[in-house]
Each structure stands twice: as C-alpha cells, then as structure tokens.
Image 1: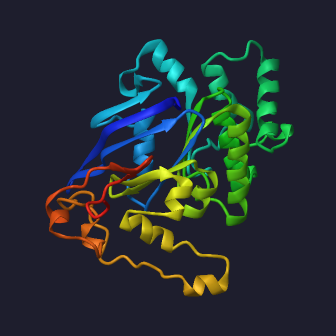
Image 2 (image 1 turned 60 degrees about the horizontal axis):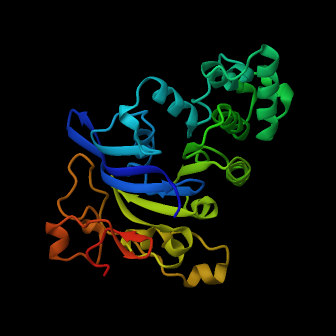
Length: 318
C-alpha cells in the first residue's frame, strides 16, 4: 500500500460576491500518494488553482477536510504549522508577478532559509543559494541580479529554487508553465521530473495542457465547474476516458501526424459553461452532454470507483 501524503475529503471553498455565492470548489475528494504526481486539469475557472491553494492553507476552507500526513491542515498551530510551511511549498503560475522586483535573487531564494533558520552563517547561506541556482540550471553569479534581468523561463527556475530552498516534501505546481513560451515549457517540466526523482518530491501539478500533464503525472484528476469528474492513472485516462467531459477534452489534443489528425473525431461540447454562482442542479455537465437523461437533472452523480483505481462521477458510466 502506498502512503497517502495528502487526503482531501468533501472540500468546499465558496466566495461571497455581489451577485451571490461563487462555488469555486464544491465537494471535492481525492488523495495524493507520497512520491507521485497528481495532475489536476480542466477549463479555466473550474477551480483547479483554488483547490490547490485551499489544500495547503493559503485559502481557508468553507467545509470539508484536508489532511497532510494525517493532520488537519486548517487546524495547524505553533510548531506544527511551522513544520508544515517548511514541508509544503508552491510554485506560482506567473514568474513575473510572484517574484519581488526590488529584491536580488539571493534574497528571494534565501527568504525561506532565514525564516526556518537553516543556515548558521552568511557563508553557508551564500553557498546554499548558489547550490540551488546550479540545481535549477542557472549560474551561481545570477544571485546578485534582479529578476527583471531574466527571461520568463529563468524566472520560473528562480521560483523553483525558492520552493526547493527549505527542502520540502510536497509542492503544489500551480500552472507553472502556462505563462512560458512553448519552447521553454518542456524544459521546466523535465526539470521538475528530474528534481522529483533526485529529491523524492510529491507534486500536485495543476495545468490545462493535457499533453504536458500526461508527460509528468502518475494519476490525473479532471475538474469541471468546481467538482471532480474523473480520476485515474495517467495511462488509463488517456487510453480509456470514461466521463463525456474527459472524452471531449482529450479529443481536442492535436496529434502530430497530419493523416491521423485529419481522421480523428473531435467531440464538440454543446452549450455554454454554466456560472459557478448559480450551478445547475443534478449533474453540472448535463447541459453540454449529449448522453444526459432525466436522472442527470435530478441527482448529482457521486464520484465512484468503476474500475480498480478509476473513479468517475457520471450516471451513464456503469
């Protein structure tokens, strides 16, 4: 049995707005095993980022429970909270806005080292920062520069070095490649894969690029309008998607063979994405699904295991 490092149970995160209550995350459950990567995918606004940030306590929960190594994340205090902030880190989506332009690279990376008193002397701190820069593919002399002197890909490497500084076990990668050029994206993903192998890291990898998620993830959770539609291992999801929404998403991935691409059937979703302020009763996906029946109007489908390790929230999947 694999050790579960993170367990999420019936998690809800709602936001009050002038138009009503926005249900960004609405009754989401999943787990992440130690040493694996769980990819979280879905359209913009489906709740991926909010889920990740609520899981690590950046956002307070509305309901439900998040357990990290068996401890409730949102109840941690004192020494337990301090230990949690060292073991759990996040790599943000936008390397342009997540790094302080007034700070030198050395100080950005050293913040965590200082907060957790991980270096006894300035010399140790300098050596550690230079080691981290080398680890992520930058030069030691980059430590004295400011972030505006770097490209987007280099900035994201600085963000990764900052996350690694405190020697975490679990990292939320919040769309870490979406703001980067396509030519740089694969370099960053390959860097994350190498670091995971070298340091035994566990990732929650949030993205909307399904082909890149397949490359890095052991298992994949597909989200739709604040809920989880399907979770299974990466190979099963891409080989045999069961939820109609997952099938539509995967049909949109371009195939680099013109003949195969031309013959491929693209599944086009009907209708518009409903508002998370006023989500439909029953199945959230029913208005865009060609298989929807009366039960989809009345009952919200539960996420259930239909094959070993393959969970789907759909009334039509037996």
